[in-house]
Image (cartoon, rainbow over all chains, first blue to last red):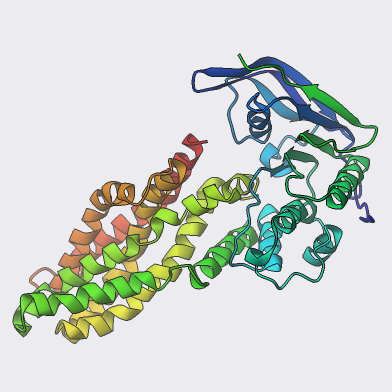
Length: 217
Length: 222
């Protein structure tokens, strides 16, 4: 595992903090959670746990700006005033956001161009997730685990401080899970922030804390 | 902002061209409509020439709507739309880029195919020129308005019915002025320019309205 950490060269992430202030989320008539506050500082990971349906995914979508909070707000503190939070955030959801008829390289190259803020080149990112040499295959022939790795490679081709990860290791084998945890640790060492929901324990190192969501009301 | 925009146009164009993308469907539909009409109305060349602009435009308009129901739905279902929310592009430019790619893959081929189909309907040379000009200006408007229906279909997971119901009424003015401009070029008495300028105006309006309204629909559904 050897990403060359080019962190801190162009912009420093050390002053960043992702803060949720008394968040509440209502889906339909059901109140998933209320008065939820948390903060994740640079180099820290917050792992959200809780039973199915407790609102983990909603919390993450809310953090990624894909859902509007019923009350309260989530924001990235310490960032330049003119940057939109969505451009500083990676959201890795349940779905892999891949197109079956495009090749592995085309899929990842597309995300690299569209997400901007240049990270690793496509080939390096593929090597990093263990898909090196598969670049010319159409994404439709990949296995579920390989598709997941390709989705994870999206986090590497665009350099963004906040990773919002919803069950990132679904379909990954034990070795790939360990590899992903190592990618996460490297990201944290470079000053990144991680907000993740997961059922499988992921070793994000000393900077990891747990946020337990309670029973739904 | 240009590079991400072009990357999105390129990806959607590739997707349309690859197997299962459905880029050729519109032209095939256009072809079927236009070839069937002479069999239905009979071999009266004068009558065919008179109704040719209307038939060709109805065919082109309906063909432009084919495939729109999957335009955003596919991206919503596979998670691409969530990831695109983090793009350096505003959502309005995301919808515009997807619309442009869709027009390049389905609208532009209609414009290219039109003169050959027009021959089958006994349209004269000035008529063919006018038809191509109106299609070139008018089909982007139909696609742009179609984006609104496509966004609803994607956002609320309802199928193609919504597109016809939402988009056809909005596209009627385009149809009216496009056909009257083509007729004006063939028979007069109104000069071609008058309805054509209205068509161009409608088209500019639609090109602004479509992407903005589609983006609003996608945001509302989050």
